[in-house]
Image 1 (spheres, rainbow, N blue to C red):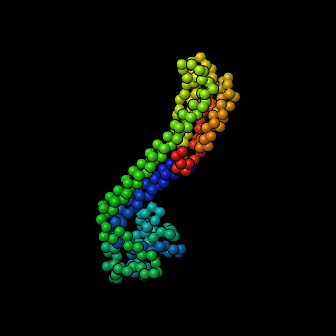
Image 2 (cartoon, rainbow, N blue to C red):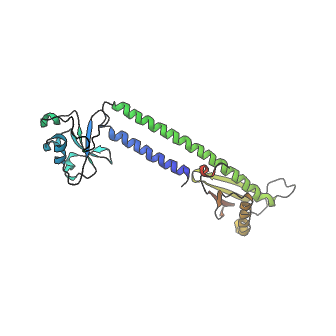
Image 3 (cartoon, one colour):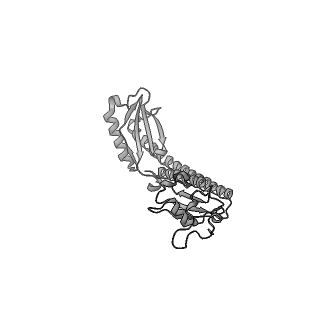
Length: 261
């Protein structure tokens, strides 16, 4: 995989992660939350008893079960199907402490479980705008890096294409001829590290063409590659497309790995 493709994949994953974080944390911002992990055999009632002192508080708004994979509280109607690895949470500021007759200031003993107060005294809007700013900065940085790598790849491809055409047509040039012996088109696909050199006879000439001179074309392509001694581009089998002989090439490594030669 090229460095450009790896970068784009990382950018997609990071962008998704930031968006999920912003969406999943919206419900919890501005509230104090203490959570404990759910283990084998735990029930919602037992977890409510451990957190609030009253097993009957499972239906209270302050007792919630969190699915970390989605960063969202699950529906209370599914409390009979909770999974190991989820979190049972107590959201402060609600009515469980008064209803149970005891304080919920320390729902989890230090060292016995993982109590995690999240986003206490934070402005929800400020946090979401901060996440958005981080996301925008990351996207702009990734886009700028992609454009730099694309420009560098195009420079290397153009240099190779110019050298290939120059060496290919050398034996075909007649002294004093007013026109070039061949017509040329070059197509670039830098995001795939591919390029095509398209050759056709000029004027009344019949070379290069694959219908009559496939062996000659293949020989000249190999000759030119030996002359250029450029190991960063590999050629594929030439093929015909209308009047053009298309010679495809693939960059073997990324620009950042090979260096700007």
